[in-house]
Length: 242
Image (tube, rainbow, N blue to C red; front, side, top):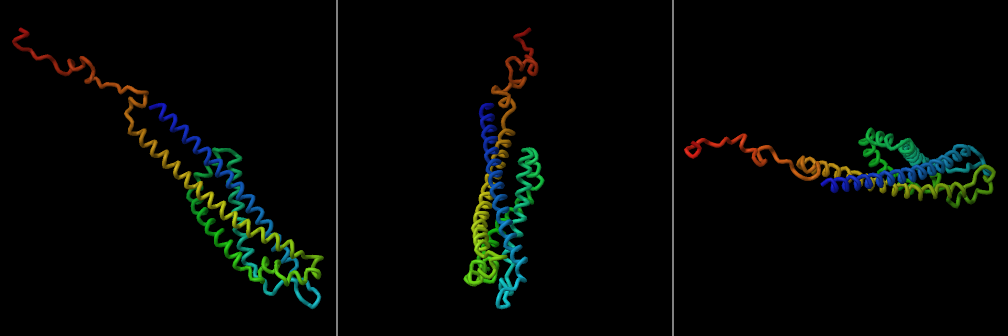
């Protein structure tokens, strides 16, 4: 029985270590992706706000009026929140397993809620960012023929080609990011499975007789030992004893 318990405990430890490694890798990947998206979207928005009032030949502006900004702002907000959360998690792992576990316990329910919200947010945000590509948003206009037509006139302060490339990669990255959160969700299921396995093992151990836990033989109660019955059942006195 001890060998079985030891093997089960070792298996759970390996399972726990593998889950921790997968969780750490997924958080690092998500941190890198969200940081990349934050940089690209910040660059696009900064370029817009710095150049929107420039006047080009023909008394025109380099950007459409009005310009649709909410898709870029929405995706930027999701990226920033995701980056901060992943940074906190990665730092907790770097500080040590105990710190990570403590952070994990404190934020258990919050993490579950935020994970669900992030999966939904990334799915919706990615879709809306693509759907809003109508030619009046930053991404759509940067990649449009209208932007190409005035590129020579604005080349001193704007490069629509770079803006188009950066935002296109941002959209593809958002798809990968949504996939990474699906991976985190799968890891969460593995964690729940491990926790369920530990509870079942603990329940089985509670039902094991005490003698079995100490290595094997069940210790006999006093009344079951040879000769022990004489103390509790005195021999009756009868004619044969007289």
